[in-house]
Image 1 (spheres, rainbow, N blue to C red):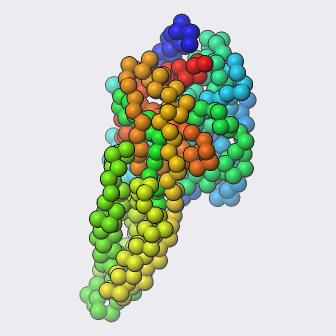
Image 2 (image 1 turned 60 degrees about the vertical axis):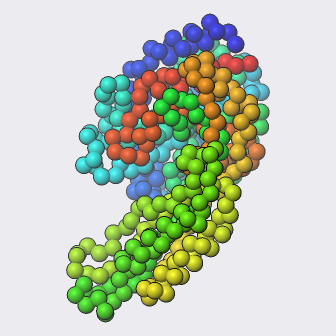
Image 3 (image 1 turned 45 degrees about the horizontal axis):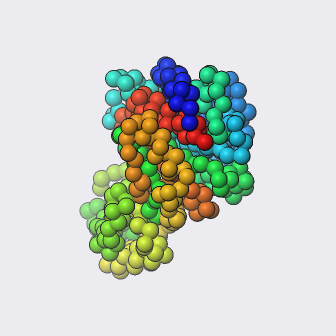
Length: 412
């Protein structure tokens, strides 16, 4: 690698703080919420990114739209753009996702989640870290090559997908079902959707992910006459407690992962009755399960249904169990895969950090690549404020990540 060329690109990236703030401002102002989360999808954000890519990078944008009648326009967008390299046979793909999660309770935010607030080198707003950090860092890496009129060694490809936060059916799932030929096995694939504060972790393996919806059905009645009804809320609460026993049933440790255990957590709960003096006849809640790869997911489902049967028998309710999402653990990316080694070199040179390969509990789109034989690595520099109130991203993290991407693009 020509160090002088890398230095030139890095110095150009250092001049982009205002560009970063502008991009984050525009992207945050376009909430990309899925229909499942009460939104209209990713269309407006995709339109802005198409405009930005064509104007600032001179890149032709290809759309691979997934039909979805629930959103305006009737489709969920997936964008692909390329900056040609010296070799057209090898591509460095950086894949980010367009959608975000809802802001949650607004009173927990110090500012409007859909309007960025810049304070002490941090940009606050929903989506600024997850996953607009990846979007912006890849954009400015490409912009630096364009502005300096330098051609990377390998083609730099940007992929911006929909629907990562819910199922990926309309995002990377759609691409792999209908357009898998976009990618080649010799390509390097980086997904900037997980990381630690010093950039020292490269994710190469993930746990299985399964989301359960539990609908407990009883009989509503006045709270003063509980004997005339069947309290679905009480049965649901007991079910949540019993499901906590999954921690004891699936208690293996794997130090490759962080955390090293399987996790089983109740999360979303739907409203049941609007008033205090009615015993609810229905109770609906959800569980997020992240399971180490050595466990059989089919057996987990069987055990969950057995626990439901026990609660049904005790409380005289019926329980419907629905699997909302299921991503079974894919084969890990080898720690000596070219993409891992390329990232290790770049992180060491740019950040002065020795990176290590680990497994994580959070599911990313890397699983889709790994299941079909592509070696993908998940990497970014993050404070992990995603999904919480007052989500933020450090401007310096975006700058440093962009330099790492540029370094990988310049490697022979």
